[in-house]
Length: 373
Image 1 (tube, rainbow, N blue to C red):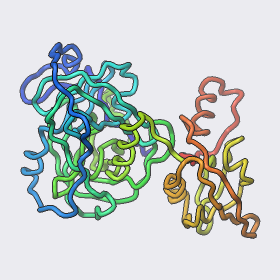
Image 2 (tube, rainbow, N blue to C red):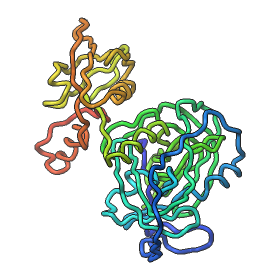
Image 3 (tube, one colour):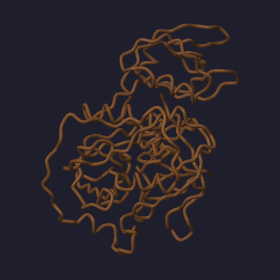
Image 4 (tube, rainbow, N blue to C red):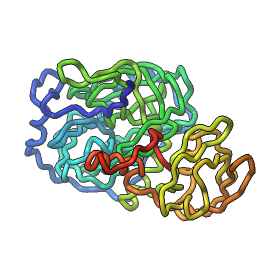
């Protein structure tokens, strides 16, 4: 069975690279408090339209001091600087359960306390803030221009080995993976650059040294036989930088991210479109008149080719938008008006699975649909 795994190692198993030999949890007890001034009115750096091709060495040299080693009481991960006044991006699952105890070591600098500005489980992204100035932000590139075969470089802290560079190519585009709360993350980049537990939240670069993704998951067939963690098999997934830009701007403004929500679970139909397999009771789709078995062919004038494209179409809208939903029902075409809602914390299928774990004898079987929009 294929298993997509977050890249978060246990703190007890991680060691710091560079010959230090210290257990990663030592950083949690680092008492290196620093008083610095915060610069206001700064912004996330966007990459220029064109830039010269860099060697892997150059990419590493230009970025290594902007990559962070993130530690919490439950594990370690990676992150990177997105503004010179101390904002860092990482994965939401890296800081999940941290209870405010987050440390960040940027480059070879001191270990600093990091404040959680906000996190978005639906995209597995989080924004941190450290009390530091004059940091070097990494430029976010345009992930929509990435092509299969493009060079890809990852920098992170696999198994606690800090600032490790791995190289490869973009293996595939428009993959879809599950977020920590069960919703799908779209337009994900697949790479064969080696990423492992501890790379979570670290940057994936193009040949211009621009961040095109945030490394988040790997594919693995099973756990290792000795109970350890599965490692790289050449299939890793990175959240696209265009998603990162949108999420970071919202997290920085309000600490939250709003996602439009239709309230259906779907499967690919026999023809173009996404067939409704389940509808969330009381949700926007139910209120708007959608029925199980309907095949959704367009939303808001945008064509829906399959279940994967449905997710992207819904997410392109705002909460509260009224959209025309075209469906095929029993061979007849219908147009319904639906007011999109706010995505809940977890999918309906996740809620049912949680109920199944608590009361298996009382919970009905549900189709293995995944996602939910």
